[in-house]
Length: 159
Image (tube, rainbow, N blue to C red; front, side):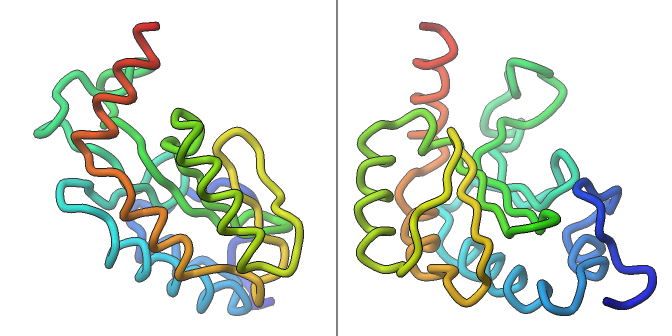
């Protein structure tokens, strides 16, 4: 590992490019590829930013002025990626909120990846870089527009 490269779990980077520059070399290519695939496939309207110390894709206030209910000054979070200490993670709020999307993703992951899915409520953990299903994450990113996410978010927050 290079001296000065980040090893702690939450970055203080101001931009996504700064975040990537902090990564250990063995994570940089994988995280850069994951970022490219997500940006290529996300529907129009989501915005890339830093959120909670990681690259995030959010619904900006220009589309959803109410913002995130936990802190309305923040845009509505949707998807994030992170290089954590022992794994690379994808955090996808839509999987947490939509059982059909979760079922689709779980089925597709099992078909495409030789290792068992390691997942929390919205966190997909990949301990082996060589097993990251980039194409699948691109498909997942494309499955929900900002408008669909807002509708689902409001339904779940208000129920």
